[in-house]
Amino acid sequence: MNRLIALMLVTGASIGMPSAGLAQSSHPDPAVIAALKQIGQDMGDAMVAADIKKLDRIFADDWTSIGVSGNVVTKETLLRNFESAHDRLEAFELGPMDVQVNGNFAVVHGSVKEKRTKAGTDTSGEFIYMDLLEKRNGTWVVLRSAGAKVR
Image (cartoon, rainbow, N blue to C red; front, top):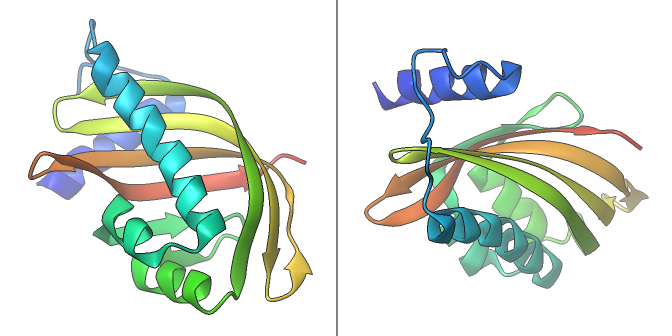
């Protein structure tokens, strides 16, 4: 059921239709919005530092992403790639973020400029992304992600 709700939330957020079966919060708590935005900063900082323990806490165990290449990536793959230095984020700058919250689910849309290498190849650029987060046991974790390179 949670996966169905998450899919509906992502679908509604992706096409900008709050009528996708879930109403978004009309007055979201500013502290929750700030905390969700901070997760993006913490994620980037942990990637730059290759802090596997912090990344392990940020991403849900069942996290998956469709990367810019179109391939599906799991949490296990992400952690392994940062631990082995196959994937290196050298620097990043977050752009504006839009956060929508509905109960224990949130969607964050944003942009980021990255200096990054994968397997020794420069993959730097400017990207847009969407993260679906879920509040589990009182903690927000990233459940799904998708992104695309714009430059």
